[in-house]
Image 1 (cartoon, protein in one colour):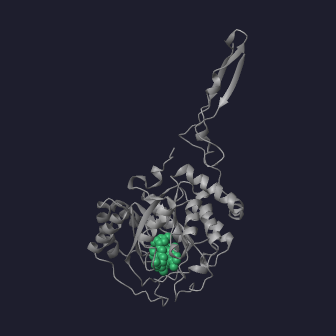
Image 2 (cartoon, protein in one colour):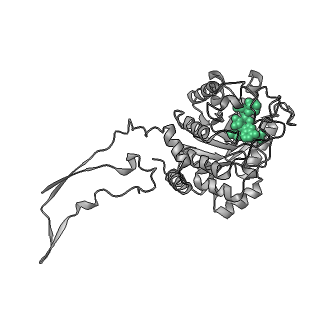
Image 3 (cartoon, rainbow, N blue to C red):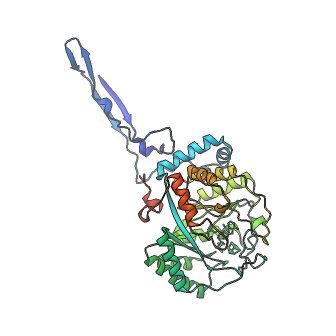
Length: 386
Ligand code: SAM
Ligand code: DTB
Ligand code: SF4
């Protein structure tokens, strides 16, 4: 008797995002075949021919591309179905109880010429944020040391620029070298970059560059008129070409529709490759800015955005970013379940307050979460990387 089987190794089939499919089943157990007779066990006279088709991993198949309709369906799915699926994807790629901690520092505050309607640092609005010069190097280093001893693994330096001017950039390169020398991961968000600026930041040791799409391309002109969506995409291309990791996300609560949210998440997932880090901010409404009175986002809708981000970008760290200080512990817990695995840690974001470290320690203790260690950060070292 000849039986012929084709065995496909399950972990390579791209099924691992489906929580219903378990990984690592032994495909050859069925080879031991025997028959019970009156005199005992008798070996069956059979020969199995098994052909194992290993996919050519030098050129792995791309996962099926998401369509806008499919993303909208996800966004509108019954919440339990959406959370179950997002959490399954999350567990496949990450330790579900480890959260990456990034600390922010505004190294150049206020006085920005851009008109981002949400931002207190634009000089067009009377938000009360004063324009300050670049911080001295020793202050940046001392703040980075504090962040590190409090448990942060990444230090993110933000500047209120349309893009960095030459004189400022050379000082920022010094910050990067000094912060990197402490053993922290470095991140910067300085606005638009050209090719040469991106290369110099990468050479100084910058690990991540944060530049958000903020919202859908359709809704974007309602929020920012002083630079285009295409300018942002160009900066992201320069960041990639220079070899840095991309931190790119958006804001929920700008008055956008659910379709805008779906379009934003789709645009993020279509960056090639997708971002390693995806900050999802809830608008912090600041008096004096055009969005000061924007209606608050329904917390369940916010969780949906986190869950869909997790499903669309399975290997990214999804960061529960601005807005956390006005979220209940239960909402934050739901966001972690839905796949958020990074936070801004430290009592201030750029100009607005964040949860203080004691509150976060208490939250982590209540939820049984731990801070992700320095060696685990970055999508390259995910627990189940294959
Ligand atoms: N000036 C640079 C730029 O715009 O790229 C870097 C700093 S800017 C403050 C970085 C990001 O912070 C923005 O793209 C936006 O997503 C987020 N942000 C700014 N103000 C916010 C607010 N009030 N609420 C939520 N997110 C905000
Ligand atoms: C991001 O996506 N959120 C951070 C960081 N990247 C630079 C900024 C949030 C800013 C919130 C308003 C403020 O504090 O000024
Ligand atoms: Fe300037 Fe950035 Fe604020 Fe826009 S978001 S006004 S570019 S600091």
